Image (tube, rainbow, N blue to C red; front, side, top):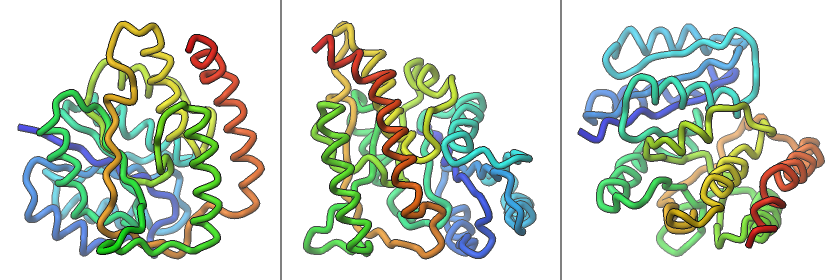
Length: 254
């Protein structure tokens, strides 16, 4: 039945949660459930999530992490719980809906139509006819980072950091999410790196053949992001650690 669980990591999101959008989706779209992960929020996020759960008990659930552990751990715990509950596809989506929920179904369609695909990643590509509203400074920093990552991964990937991703539930996915990630911020890169390690012996189709990047129709840079310019050096340090742990090993075999 293509049951899908969308994990929504939340940390102090009370002012940014678009509850109306989640309500509308919950009323109208079958076989999609939301698992919100409250990552130790200090504001009113958890009561709002509990209220939404009471409105839609068959569609919405909330997993409460009493201490803030960062987005990576919130997503990891949510994905593991979603797989434990049984679903064919599991996604994670930014709580601010910078990528709207209208993109969930196109992601699912790719998974349905192409059974060899195990991952669909949103890509913020500012093409004619699309609405990608992103600060220029973030865009250029993002392009620099994406180019470096693509070179290190040896994959022609355009956008690793878009907060909209969907996965087919497989044993590989369980292995990838089994252990905590190195980075709070660029765990998306680490997900791909772990898949590269799992498939580095050449016995199965390469990672590049199981990922699809889907250009988004609309993406909005919602104010209030937890990521700041001061995190840049920490992110670069995390990237070097990811490279050392996974990619040096994989690229040495290439």
